[in-house]
Image (tube, rainbow, N blue to C red; front, side):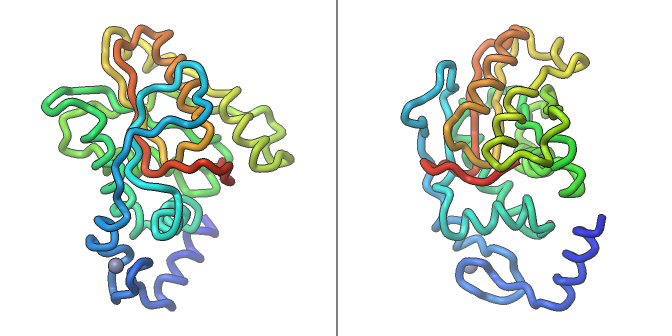
Length: 222
Ligand SMILES: [Zn+2]
């Protein structure tokens, strides 16, 4: 709550400008989004067992990194739409046209989601797939071991992965369905591989993933 209030205050005080080219009154202009988008099939090296076919919209660098961090950790609601646009392009490339898939967001730890004023991948994923005909299902949850606040970034990442679960109320929806997992960043691929194994265990048929950005380097995330 404090974060949201501070963010709103900062927005009032600092004039918004495109984080790429600096033109005024827009968070990230469509020309800069187009320039940043480099759709590609991405696989980490080495790829973890069960890593699903994954389309990334961009590399995790430059404007894209700033936009994701802004939308996710800095309370910049005006960057949610542009980041969702990139994810939407990746999702379109990942799924055959006119097919109806289940879209499943990667869950945040509850403490991280509270600190951000909600689960950012739900916000971004819903925007990215609105009007696509896909069904958005929060089928996964991430608890935590209770030690998350004492863990470093890598520890929190491992904790999120270990604690990922199928939500009991959503698991029945997955049987026999094609599932598109969505996330903001893919690094080692272990989170997507874990999620893919969970949805397959519930009977999902094809499993693919779409992400905003891919990086070879370990990044701080929760
Ligand atoms: Zn721009």
